[in-house]
Length: 465
Image (cartoon, rainbow, N blue to C red; front, side, top):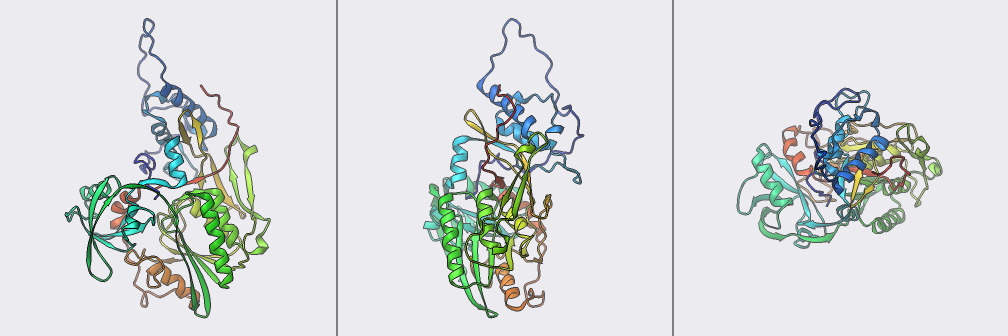
């Protein structure tokens, strides 16, 4: 699961400030006479000094960072990286765009990036104001071993009916009991109407981000390959091998169309995102530009284009992507990179909006991740901070398990493949504005990783202090 420490992805954006070399929001403290007993410089002071120096060097918006920030007032590099976000002034946007720069202990990043975590192994979303559903389950986790499935409704937690998307106390209670507790008992309502009590104890497990792959035959005379991919982080060797297995399966089945389900994919490694695109693009794209990474004007020599290296034998003319507001960063990158080469059909809800990325910069026992580059596709398209808009708006079918052909988003894709048109509102469940659920669902997903991580090792100009 992409559940990070609570400070990793705080999405509150501090009000926009003028682009000037001063930090007026938090003035430096008055000078203190330390001639007789000067304060000792701690290791954390040195770490924070280095983080400041690196940020003034590699941050995409480094020109707006003041020279006068009292960086030592922060408890750790994550606090400073979070504060840094307010200086991400992007033309065309009224508010700072960076919601992602962060710092993390190296041991924690090693676990997160490799897909090793400790919790119950499932995540939840509100389907309606008082209807809480399992949105996904990790198969090797305690929840997966207990047989819990996507779509099950949670009716009680520790015997209490405290489920309400409009109530902050309820949201906080769900976060605490689902994501932060070591032991919780849940009462589930199953699709057949029966109920089941399950007591879970958190444990360490390895994530497997490919939740499902299958083939649907005779969809209007076509064969369709479907894959659910929840992250571009994890055991990278396993993911690469799974890509090879799945797309070999699709090729052997002579699939005509492919549906990639990225609805909760918050991103991860750029190279895995590029590999997925290499399987999806037609052979004619081989050797052409897939994406370009652009750094700030201090590092133009590091700007890099990654070319298509066609994998597999599929020759697709279009690709369908299922997305939601949790489709972010490296998963949006796949979508953007595919647009110049095939007809891209988007189904679901607006995506998250993160066309920028970073790479880990080591400082002592920490990594810092200041936003360092932006991405564009072959056509120079990028800057999608507002996210992608679907061709067909469809509510997330949280009441169905993965692969159910009656699940709203998948059904919409299959309808188009079979008939050449999306289902009409009369034939389909009409799209319902569920903005009233946003408060609750944003809270439930706020700790999930959203990022685009490059495998780069730049020779940074900043001098460590």
